[in-house]
Image (cartoon, rainbow, N blue to C red; front, side, top):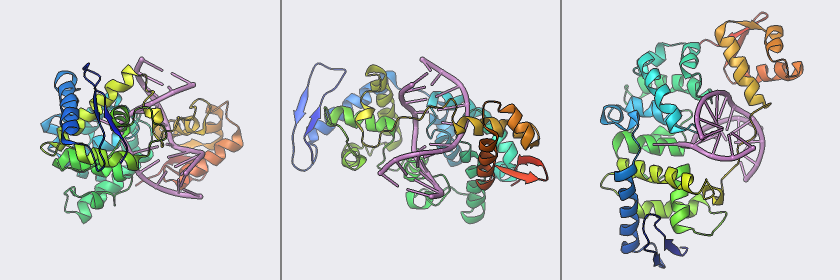
Length: 298
DNA sequence: GTCCAGTTAG
DNA sequence: CTAACCGGAC
């Protein structure tokens, strides 16, 4: 166990607490108070945080998948629109990929939209229409990894799971790993576990994430960079990612030929366009019918 | 240019 | 282990 040092930002008091096998009760208490205080004063509100929404596991699944690598403020509007169009798993299962992708437009990471269809099928056919509450089961679904599985289990069922995402990581780096670099999640997780307020895990994690956002604003995201697994995003302009996005939007409008697509991507090499399209076919986005490419049926 | 309630394939 | 994935916002 590393040295623990607690330095609240909203107080002049500085606690130092070193211990051999975990945080002391005093530190845990002080830390929780700091997080809860902030949350009760400055906590963010989102549609998916209201009881109307978190009480419906389907909605938690949708929101958590949308929230992967996509800012919460940007998700909230799209989320509500999406729910109007697709209110439950059945409506997703009945929809075509093109319809789901259309509603997904603007969120990015479109593979997530394709995964939703598979998830809906699995829930309806293999789980009697119910979203499992256990992490192990949730991880069986496509595009639901450890973090999203724990998030769904926590937010939909209020279970005391231990998990880390970017804002939570920032909070623990800030309080307990001051001046340290290359900190692994494996070092942070025990602290998340020890400090977890099991009386209300759902809201505790809301509070943690809000505190993380607050820290990132205050320190211009210098803290997160001390995480071992922190990775800078690759430039977007001129990337194949950008090209893929354009191609998907073009084909979403109507079936297109290779020539047509290439023409619309003027700054992209034709060979490159062809290769990207091949990738997108492999990944299940596109299908080819003669000369024309369209969104693959599902 | 930087980042985001991450996951997956290689 | 790393690279790729999408696109809007600041």
